[in-house]
Amino acid sequence: MESFKKWLRAAGVRAVKTLAQTAIAGIGTAVMLGEVNWLAVVSAALMAVILSLLTSVAGLPEIK
Picture (cartoon, rainbow, N blue to C red):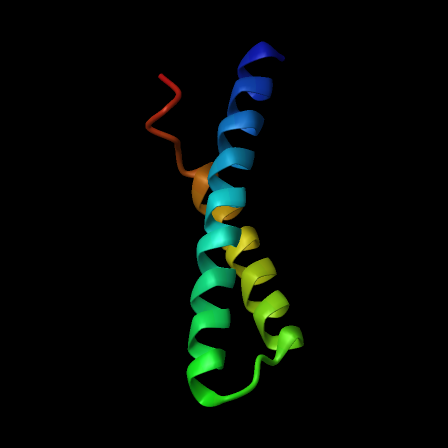
């Protein structure tokens, strides 16, 4: 159970960082086009979180 908690914490930290990076990229791109489509930004960011968590299933280098 302890190892699962470590994995969940590391995967969560990675997912939150991915969410922030994706949102920043989406907002930055949208600003260049003139208007931020918030639904598209949130949708892309949430998809990135899901993909990050699924990728973390393969293994996290932070956890030995």
